[in-house]
Image (cartoon, rainbow, N blue to C red; front, side):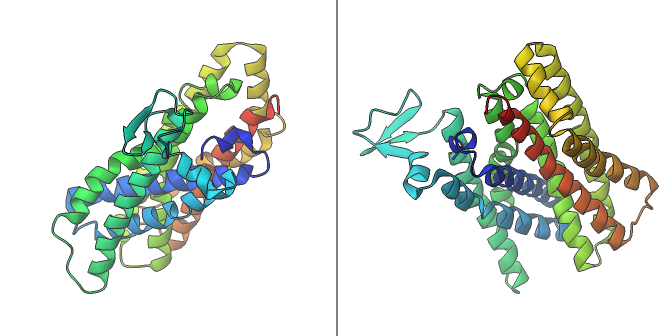
Length: 312
């Protein structure tokens, strides 16, 4: 889908939502896998909710991409083209009557999405079967988690890398966008799990407290990479880059950046963590998680919108 990112000014929020949900899904999947490997029984609620979050967050992604591209055939074109086609570039592998498009920056994201969706489904299916009173398939959750984590890592970080490969000044000068998007995926994935645990009140106080501590740590990393991203853009020094950065931190997106991304999404949640008890109440945990999720979405919205503003 990614070709449609800068092509279409009609559906910008669809792409923002896709990137946001992909980050949440990848982050939640990685957290659930680590929790499962550390102690699946002790962190059962985190594992269970994390895999469900990953599956249901990634489920709308193909729909969003198809809507943005306009035609389902364009979505399929991200994976393969008939062997007779000459528009394949240098990244294709021939398989039967088709050229598989594998390794270009755009097509790699589509394949990663496909692979991650498969393993997110398998992990969620294993959890579902266990929830229904059955037995977990031997090794399925573990191996689906391990292999799927590679795809989840890619899905969470890939949008930032893809943006950096475009010709827009703000993106091409922001060499740390991939790391920043990955940190946002970690914080929002953890926040999504924490929100559901808090709302369910499922007796997971210990797990919830640890998850909130991890979310706070991820927010600190997110803030560091955000600063590094801005510094790297400022270091580029060209007039076009300075103008693009001004769109992000001044006008027209400055209020969203400072109040939404920095204030609501990072500063207030971190202050809440500093003042909270070891076992926070479900209500405070839910508010904390919602703020992190809002800030994560606004971070991607503001950066993408500001980057497209120049020359649009």
